Image (cartoon, rainbow, N blue to C red; front, side, top):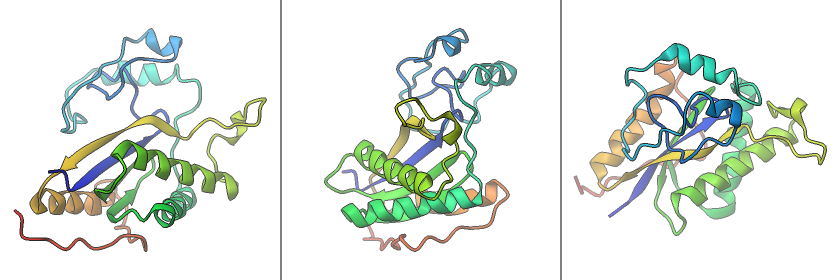
Length: 201
C-alpha cells in the first residue's frame, strides 16, 4: 500500500520532454523543440539522470526553448518555500522532507486523500503566486498581452510511490542530503514534520 510520495518537481527548461535519457512526457508541445525528436516517455520510477546520452544534442535542444531555463536563486527558493507552506496550511499536507534547488525540488509527502499530481499542482500554484507577489517571478519579463506570466515550472513531475518505513526513510535521507550533492548547505524548513517509523520495514 502506498504510504508516501517522493516527488521531484523541475523548473522550466531543466528536463526536456525529448531528453535522450527519457522523460515523463507523452509529447513535445513546441515545434522548434520537436525538431530534436519526439517525446521519450519512460515508465520507470528510477532516476535516469546518469544514463549515457548525447549531451551536446541536449544542450542544442535547450536553445530552442521559448523562454530561458529557470534557475531559482536563494531569494526565489525562499519564496517557493513560503508558497509551499501556504499550500500546506490550505490542505494539511504532511511533508517529511524538502529540498529546493535551483532547477529541481524534492519532497517526501505523506499519502492523503489527494493524488500526488493534485498535491504537486497545488504546491506549484502557491509557490508561483508567492514568487509573483514578492516580485521574484523569474519569467516576469515574458508577461503575455492578457497579463499572464509563463509558469516557472515544468508541466509534469516525477512521483515515486513509497510503501514501507524503509522506503520512506531512504527517500527522506536522499532528499535531506540532496543540497550537499549540489554543493549547497543542508536545508531546514519549518513546515517539515519528522517521520515516525511504524516498524513496517
